[in-house]
Length: 333
Image 1 (tube, helix red, strand yellow):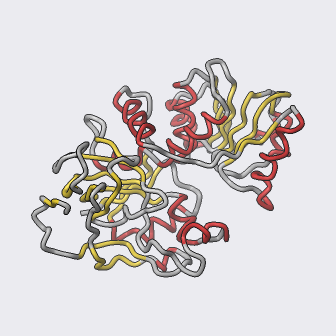
Image 2 (cartoon, rainbow, N blue to C red):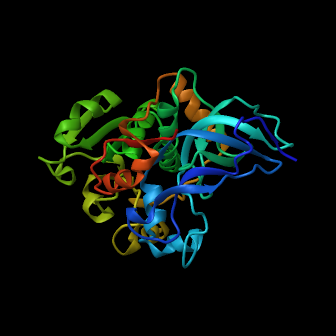
Image 3 (tube, rainbow, N blue to C red):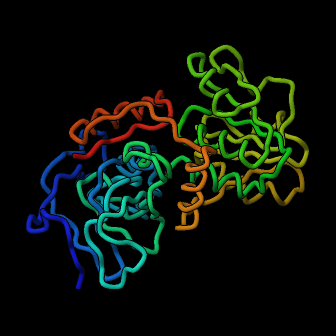
């Protein structure tokens, strides 16, 4: 039996951004939807902020057919998207001891999603933690998606102090996190950005910034231990001249013809430059680590804009222009 302390507990519905079929942003509708009930090991969260990100867009459109094996072959099983969230605990399953009603929490929900709604449930043992001290809901919501993807890749590359990194696309949610994390781990970072965001990327900690609107970064005369394409717009072939003989190429996208997972299987066999394509995962320990970085001032997500839930279709359209700087935050009232 779960306990609920929220004053609106008699209301079984909530406002949520719902989709019933794959497609463009317009398939998403903000409507009344059944409010979830926490299981014995779950907490019920009143969501105050979320984000629209590449993960949400990818599952909504299902343009990569492989996504359907996780989300539903002919239509989405989970009707409410949203991976990142920040909010307040309002209900507890009977087996939950780590949280109490009134706790301000943040985290990541993948592949369960559910954060584009007024209420969501998550496992108390999952990737959820108390919010960093001094953070608002809008500031805490975008802490996890870009950061955990970047962290997964940097750990796969066994990042260490003194490594030389090239990060392509340093102004997206993943790229801006990767710059900050790489500096935290002691790497030397060269990053790419457009003209208007050069100063932003320098302020994130990059040692050098290349304006990709004026210079092709693949033509520069330097060698790196790791080339990390945080926007998936290059290729191993194009970046190979930049990589040291034992260096690494990583990308956040499958690549042309889904080549990156295949290259990740075969390139390590030859003992030279190799491709890594780690499958991202996130645990509670990762969210606690992200909280620590945030409280220490070592990581802060970049936010492009904050919009209300009823503007979510426009938010999706903007995210899919690939022109956003950092994160698009959704305020949920």
